[in-house]
Image 1 (cartoon, rainbow, N blue to C red):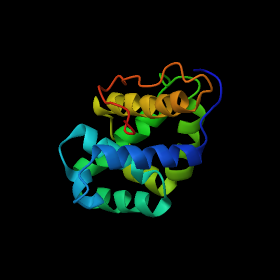
Image 2: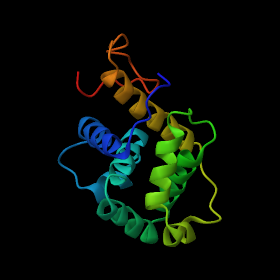
Image 3: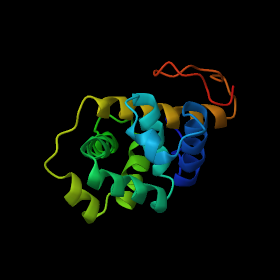
Image 4: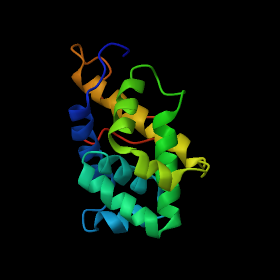
Length: 155
């Protein structure tokens, strides 16, 4: 699984697919991110990392809602984690550089992450791992369940 590093456009496709699979279709992003369901708001946060416009919605919401700001802090710490596998770290660094600009960092500075950042770390690992499994040549690990207990969204 070490091999090829997933690029940002592949991440965008996977994050979009996971959000479609793991979140209710009838609710807007602003409502989904406020939910108290870890899997749903984590899916939405990673989906928001697929475009600057979506991420700006999250940033704007976090200016008015402390719980969303805390989720943003957890996301930042998940992307910054030294516990991410080597094949995930370059993508996480790229995403951090694209989205966590000084204006966002000013908003989240001096806020400690919660235990949810570990869940977000796992989510990122699994999203990348699933992509790699689906796209490896011999497909020997197809159908693997993730550590989150989620089935492959395409199944």
